[in-house]
Amino acid sequence: MLKKTERLSLVEQVVIQIEHLIESGHWQIGDQLPAEMQLMKEFDVSRNTLREAIRALVHAGLLETKQGSGTVVKSSSAFGVALHRQVEKSSIMETLEVRLALEREAAQLAAIRRNDLDLEAMTESIQLCKLASEKGDVQEFLQADIIFHKAMVKASHNKMLERLYEHITEPLQSSIEEIMVADAYFNYSEEIHYELLEAIKKQDVQAAISYVNTYINDFRKKIKRIQED
Amino acid sequence: MLKKTERLSLVEQVVIQIEHLIESGHWQIGDQLPAEMQLMKEFDVSRNTLREAIRALVHAGLLETKQGSGTVVKSSSAFGVALHRQVEKSSIMETLEVRLALEREAAQLAAIRRNDLDLEAMTESIQLCKLASEKGDVQEFLQADIIFHKAMVKASHNKMLERLYEHITEPLQSSIEEIMVADAYFNYSEEIHYELLEAIKKQDVQAAISYVNTYINDFRKKIKRIQED
DNA sequence: TTTTGAAAAGTTGTAGGATGATTGGACTTA
DNA sequence: TAAGTCCAATCATCCTACAACTTTTCAAAA
Image (tube, rainbow over all chains, first blue to last red; front, side, top):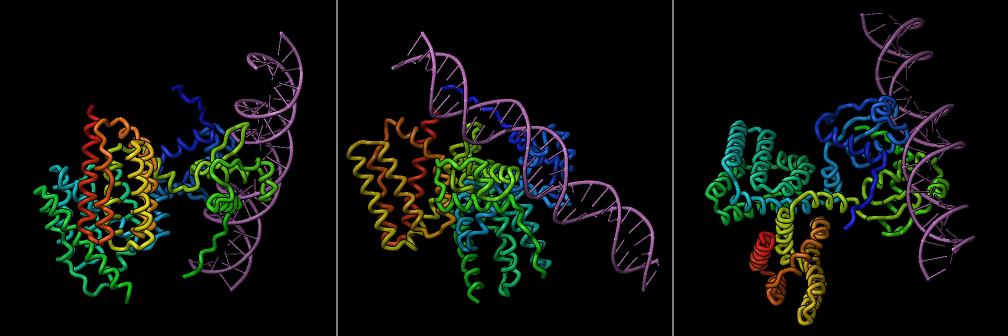
């Protein structure tokens, strides 16, 4: 097989450089980029070339431009933006079902592959859940709950699963929070996933899966009930 | 709350129009777009504006431009391209694990929600599998197998799950084919998912899940074995 | 002092023209 | 027929100019 002779256009080179600067954190979310005039000089390209590069990243959702004001970093992950848009086009129920699929697989893999660091992170976040529940702070509780779930997914040691889970859960967050806060019957203690952590600790795959199944099915029923009100 | 005063830039308007033309099938994959000069006139914008729009879609993966030749439609789904890129950055095993997650959920939902049309489509594709296996044609068998899986996912009646499954499976396809063709121990009859279809037909959720579990675990072992050679 | 409003400076948006680089096809020639 | 040349079409890049919008500045008015 011959190597494909493919020269990158100037625009694409600039795009790649900007993407790198964002992914590496050199330009953080919220940061304002230098003005076009200055970027032209720094990248040593014409204004058209620079603008085409910026426009590509604006459409991808990484940047946002406002006439007269400037260009700011909006997101650091094009994949995250794409998934975000997809979630917005779907119903909450559909998205929850996908999340359940990922969570079940993650629980299973975590039960097999978790190491001491993973267990430590999960234990710590469950402590936070407990603290928040004792204080009766719903917001704080949900935030700690998310940290626990993310820690579990991370313990699956599957980067793709992790990214998918994160970018699907993120846009769901506000909806979930809304629903939970409105739920008069919300029960903290039930929501603290001691059993799940124990199952993963003991590497009991079946117990981990069945816990996730019941937990998310309850969750689904709760949402359905609230939505029907 | 006040309404956000937000005018779409000319570039964004052109982008949206082109996206529509592609999604609606007016410009199909492989089609060549009119030259810039003509598109300028049709959209009634300047060359810069048009080029910025096209560049955005090129970077999104919907279009491809080649100097001296022209611009052609490369894909009809920006989400598909984004997912494709993500899969390429991941290992086969990671991707398979995600696919398993989706497949398990799909089997469960399909067992609950499948209607007569779904069952018909699945039965038909399983017939194709059988025919191909009798002929001993691996390629054809795998193609029919994919159709069966897609039919099952469709029977879950979750559009998001369907899109995710499709765009994750697609780039896996060539790798799987390669591996299967190379597998001397490849056994057709084992791969025909009669039991799964029966479980879904009888709406036996547990049986459907457990079948998918064993089937994909076997598949995983097979891949691992072959990769270790 | 505080508020208002106009001017100025800075930034992105759009337009049009000019030239270079590459491609693919038509044409020529051996 | 086959190889090479030329030419027209097309995208790539650069340039200048002006319009539209935002923020800042600052002076006048209340």
